Each structure stands twice: as structure tokens, then as C-alpha cells.
Image 1 (cartoon, one colour):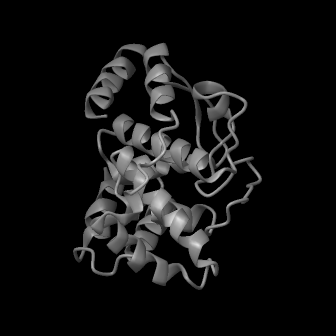
Image 2 (cartoon, rainbow, N blue to C red):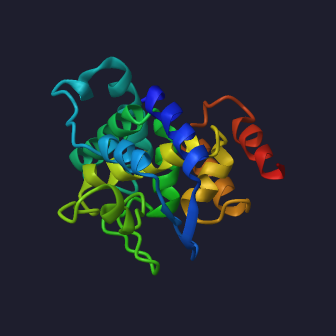
Length: 211
């Protein structure tokens, strides 16, 4: 994953990125063929190992987050399956699961079938143009693992575009790069589910808004 991110940054520097549309949602871009190939590889379906949810670190995180989400998702098996999948797909993409949880909280309120006025779909509110660009038309963005694979891949891609700047990457994910409202809301949600996170983490991240 790290090697691909480095190659992606080089490809973007050579090819450039040209936005086609922006309307308060993820921005559709002209992508270099090498970037498309890398993103397509990242959304390939690799199911988690059968014992993934039984790993000590995963189980502890799921147990903690499950208690916090009980009021939002009443069915415990559904809740735990969602959280295990979030942890797996976030980790696979090189993201903090807490960050992905914050995006889902703010984007869809944990509604699997959320559908925005701009056409974004599912838990992570993925725009359908991504299916055309890096996937195939059989991919269902309302399917749990498909939505999370796309969402985590796209967010990791934006982190590469912004050279690791979480604040700007979140803004790009929302189509509002340079504005503070969306990144601050996601980081606040991230802290909401992780009160034991290092004090001031969100503040440090949000300082990049002034860049």
C-alpha cells in the first residue's frame, strides 16, 4: 500500500488532476491510467480472514465501539459486523478506523441506505462516478463491504493527493477543500467515539485549515 501511494503521488505530479464537477460532494477528476489501475486494485474484494474479528486488538475495539453505537444500531450482530468490517477495510487501506467511523457518523449517521441529493450512497456516501472510474457497474454501493472498500480507498487516495494532510483530505472527500466545517465535524465525531484519544488531536489536525 505504501509503495502504491508513493507511485500515485509521482503519477499525479506528472499527469495532473483536472476537476470536472463540484457540488458539495466528492469531486470527479480526470485520473491518469496508472492512478486508475492503483485505485482499482485497492477496491478488489479481499474478504477478511475468518478469525479476524477474534483478534485481541480487533475484538477490544469492536467491544468498545459496539457499546457506543448501541443507541444507533439496535441489533448487536449487525452492529458488530459493521464495526469489524470498518476496522478491516480501514486498516487494509492504511487508515485509522476511528477516522473512518467519524466519516460514517457525519456522512450517513450509520444509515446503510443513505442517499444524498448529490447522489452519494451508503455508509460513506460514495459518489457513483467512482464505480465507472475504478470499478464496474455490478458494484453495489449500498452493500456494506463494497461501500467501505470504495470509501476507504477514496479517502486514502485523497490523503495521498494532500500529502498526508488529514484536514484537507477530508475537505476533498466532501468537495469542500479549504473550508473548515466538514473536517471539523468529522474530527469531532472521531473524538466522540474515542474520548481516550490524545488530548488536542483534533486541534492539531485542524490547524492545517490555516495553510
